Length: 172
Image 1 (tube, rainbow, N blue to C red):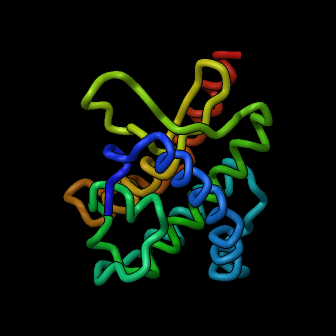
Image 2: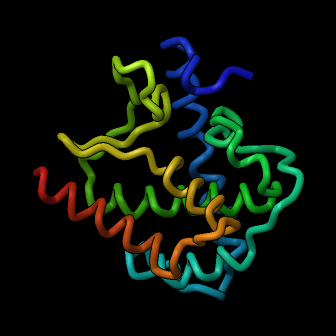
Protein backbone atom coordinates (compact mmCIF):
# COMPACT_ATOMS: atom_id res chain seq x y z
CA UNK A 1 0.00 0.00 0.00
CA UNK A 2 1.29 3.43 -0.95
CA UNK A 3 1.73 5.87 1.95
CA UNK A 4 0.42 9.43 1.74
CA UNK A 5 3.85 10.85 0.90
CA UNK A 6 4.07 8.82 -2.31
CA UNK A 7 0.54 9.25 -3.67
CA UNK A 8 -0.05 10.83 -7.03
CA UNK A 9 -2.26 13.91 -7.17
CA UNK A 10 -5.23 11.77 -8.25
CA UNK A 11 -4.60 9.17 -5.54
CA UNK A 12 -4.30 11.92 -2.90
CA UNK A 13 -7.66 13.36 -4.01
CA UNK A 14 -9.22 9.89 -3.73
CA UNK A 15 -7.64 9.42 -0.28
CA UNK A 16 -9.16 12.73 0.85
CA UNK A 17 -12.59 11.58 -0.37
CA UNK A 18 -12.18 8.26 1.45
CA UNK A 19 -11.20 10.08 4.64
CA UNK A 20 -14.22 12.38 4.40
CA UNK A 21 -16.59 9.46 3.78
CA UNK A 22 -15.30 7.79 6.95
CA UNK A 23 -16.18 10.78 9.18
CA UNK A 24 -19.93 10.22 9.80
CA UNK A 25 -19.69 6.47 10.51
CA UNK A 26 -16.69 7.07 12.80
CA UNK A 27 -18.59 9.72 14.75
CA UNK A 28 -21.62 7.44 15.11
CA UNK A 29 -19.36 4.66 16.36
CA UNK A 30 -17.86 6.99 18.97
CA UNK A 31 -21.26 8.21 20.13
CA UNK A 32 -22.48 4.63 20.57
CA UNK A 33 -19.30 3.60 22.39
CA UNK A 34 -19.42 6.59 24.76
CA UNK A 35 -23.11 6.25 25.54
CA UNK A 36 -23.85 8.16 28.72
CA UNK A 37 -20.27 8.00 30.02
CA UNK A 38 -19.39 11.47 28.69
CA UNK A 39 -21.69 14.33 27.68
CA UNK A 40 -20.86 14.98 24.02
CA UNK A 41 -22.10 18.53 23.48
CA UNK A 42 -19.55 19.35 20.74
CA UNK A 43 -17.73 21.86 22.93
CA UNK A 44 -14.00 22.15 23.56
CA UNK A 45 -14.78 21.59 27.25
CA UNK A 46 -16.22 18.14 26.48
CA UNK A 47 -12.83 17.04 25.11
CA UNK A 48 -11.28 16.82 28.60
CA UNK A 49 -13.61 14.12 29.95
CA UNK A 50 -13.79 12.45 26.52
CA UNK A 51 -10.01 12.17 26.30
CA UNK A 52 -9.81 10.72 29.84
CA UNK A 53 -12.50 8.18 28.89
CA UNK A 54 -10.79 7.32 25.60
CA UNK A 55 -7.27 6.96 27.03
CA UNK A 56 -8.52 4.28 29.43
CA UNK A 57 -9.79 2.23 26.47
CA UNK A 58 -6.78 2.38 24.16
CA UNK A 59 -5.00 -0.95 23.82
CA UNK A 60 -2.02 -2.39 22.03
CA UNK A 61 -2.55 -5.36 19.76
CA UNK A 62 -3.16 -6.38 16.16
CA UNK A 63 -4.46 -3.41 14.20
CA UNK A 64 -6.79 -5.38 11.92
CA UNK A 65 -8.95 -3.09 9.77
CA UNK A 66 -7.53 0.43 9.82
CA UNK A 67 -9.12 3.77 8.95
CA UNK A 68 -7.53 5.45 5.92
CA UNK A 69 -5.49 7.96 7.94
CA UNK A 70 -3.77 5.09 9.76
CA UNK A 71 -3.50 2.71 6.81
CA UNK A 72 -1.90 5.36 4.55
CA UNK A 73 0.29 6.84 7.29
CA UNK A 74 3.80 5.72 8.05
CA UNK A 75 2.68 2.68 10.05
CA UNK A 76 3.16 4.40 13.41
CA UNK A 77 -0.29 3.29 14.57
CA UNK A 78 0.12 -0.40 13.78
CA UNK A 79 0.75 -1.16 17.45
CA UNK A 80 -2.79 -0.03 18.43
CA UNK A 81 -5.53 -2.64 18.20
CA UNK A 82 -8.48 -2.28 15.84
CA UNK A 83 -10.89 -1.05 18.53
CA UNK A 84 -8.40 1.64 19.58
CA UNK A 85 -8.00 2.82 15.99
CA UNK A 86 -11.80 3.00 15.65
CA UNK A 87 -11.97 5.00 18.86
CA UNK A 88 -9.31 7.44 17.64
CA UNK A 89 -11.13 7.68 14.31
CA UNK A 90 -14.27 8.74 16.18
CA UNK A 91 -12.29 11.29 18.19
CA UNK A 92 -10.96 12.74 14.93
CA UNK A 93 -14.53 13.13 13.65
CA UNK A 94 -15.71 14.68 16.91
CA UNK A 95 -12.85 17.20 16.92
CA UNK A 96 -13.52 18.03 13.27
CA UNK A 97 -17.19 18.71 14.13
CA UNK A 98 -16.11 21.09 16.90
CA UNK A 99 -13.73 22.93 14.60
CA UNK A 100 -16.06 23.19 11.60
CA UNK A 101 -18.91 24.38 13.81
CA UNK A 102 -16.71 27.13 15.22
CA UNK A 103 -15.06 27.87 11.86
CA UNK A 104 -17.66 27.26 9.14
CA UNK A 105 -15.34 28.67 6.47
CA UNK A 106 -12.82 25.85 7.08
CA UNK A 107 -12.41 23.68 3.99
CA UNK A 108 -10.76 20.35 3.29
CA UNK A 109 -7.86 20.02 0.88
CA UNK A 110 -4.89 17.81 0.17
CA UNK A 111 -1.82 19.03 2.06
CA UNK A 112 1.03 19.88 -0.29
CA UNK A 113 4.39 21.55 0.02
CA UNK A 114 7.34 21.65 -2.38
CA UNK A 115 9.76 20.62 0.38
CA UNK A 116 10.58 16.94 -0.16
CA UNK A 117 10.51 16.18 3.59
CA UNK A 118 7.11 17.74 4.27
CA UNK A 119 5.63 15.30 6.82
CA UNK A 120 1.98 15.96 5.96
CA UNK A 121 2.33 15.62 2.18
CA UNK A 122 -0.97 14.51 0.62
CA UNK A 123 -2.79 14.11 3.95
CA UNK A 124 -6.31 15.49 4.51
CA UNK A 125 -5.84 19.04 5.77
CA UNK A 126 -8.38 21.49 7.13
CA UNK A 127 -7.71 25.11 6.11
CA UNK A 128 -9.27 28.46 6.98
CA UNK A 129 -7.32 31.36 5.51
CA UNK A 130 -3.72 31.10 6.71
CA UNK A 131 -4.62 28.51 9.37
CA UNK A 132 -4.17 24.84 8.52
CA UNK A 133 -4.15 21.61 10.49
CA UNK A 134 -4.06 17.87 9.87
CA UNK A 135 -6.36 16.65 12.69
CA UNK A 136 -5.88 12.93 12.01
CA UNK A 137 -2.12 13.17 12.46
CA UNK A 138 -2.36 15.10 15.71
CA UNK A 139 -5.02 12.89 17.30
CA UNK A 140 -3.47 9.68 15.99
CA UNK A 141 -0.16 10.73 17.54
CA UNK A 142 -1.86 11.48 20.87
CA UNK A 143 -3.26 7.96 20.87
CA UNK A 144 0.14 6.48 20.16
CA UNK A 145 1.74 8.61 22.90
CA UNK A 146 -0.52 7.07 25.55
CA UNK A 147 1.93 4.15 25.56
CA UNK A 148 5.10 6.26 25.61
CA UNK A 149 7.29 7.29 28.52
CA UNK A 150 5.56 10.70 28.40
CA UNK A 151 1.83 10.07 27.96
CA UNK A 152 -0.30 13.10 27.10
CA UNK A 153 -1.93 14.97 29.96
CA UNK A 154 -5.63 14.61 30.78
CA UNK A 155 -6.38 18.01 29.23
CA UNK A 156 -4.06 17.64 26.22
CA UNK A 157 -6.74 17.12 23.55
CA UNK A 158 -8.81 20.06 24.80
CA UNK A 159 -5.74 22.31 24.96
CA UNK A 160 -4.72 21.43 21.40
CA UNK A 161 -8.17 22.11 19.96
CA UNK A 162 -8.51 25.27 22.05
CA UNK A 163 -5.19 26.54 20.68
CA UNK A 164 -6.28 25.70 17.11
CA UNK A 165 -9.44 27.76 17.55
CA UNK A 166 -7.41 30.64 19.01
CA UNK A 167 -4.98 30.45 16.08
CA UNK A 168 -7.74 30.47 13.49
CA UNK A 169 -9.41 33.43 15.23
CA UNK A 170 -6.07 35.29 15.16
CA UNK A 171 -5.70 34.72 11.40
CA UNK A 172 -9.19 35.99 10.50
